[in-house]
Length: 265
Image (cartoon, rainbow, N blue to C red; front, top):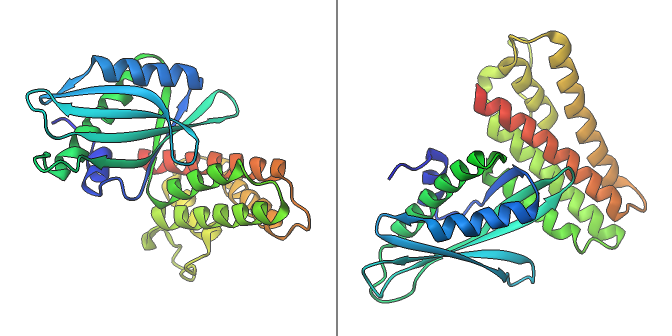
């Protein structure tokens, strides 16, 4: 199988740490592409199909089903969840993936590999159709997805503050994912475990060392500003759902920028 290494790692983990992809396009276009591509695809002796349905939470999803062509046994189900974001941006997430419980089902590891190959093929299809995509994985992506889910029901200040706390933890995880000790300046102390802003700024200054100082300084100021806004939301007396949505958008944008730098270096 010609599987993207990111997806292969996710398959090995059985998608336990989540998966998220940011797509530039409308939700209708993305969903139509997923369904059409799944129905046209044959992978390693397996057949795919996709259909609209609803998740346990009631959120609309697309269920991707995989079946062995030459057998009545085996199968896998992947849940693809979509969330609209401003500017014709769609977040695609996999909240669940599971294999068949049938006695003669094919091995669980193959479940993940088949779905991973489908995702690789799907990303290529998105690019062909003109969608731009960026894959976000790991704990940061999972927490951002959780914040998006909770935004739907964040109708009181306590819920908004709880959501802001999740966003803060997402920034801390992001910093820990990209920061390495070699990025610390020689005359500086090692940043503490939850010192996200310092780690992210060390990362930016090291990985963007060849660009202008003005650009790096602006990026570092953005890191401070997003962190400060999120902290202000946590301590605000009466925060609103709109405040939370703004904060989510800014943390997502910063995450996308940092992830892009990390992928290019």
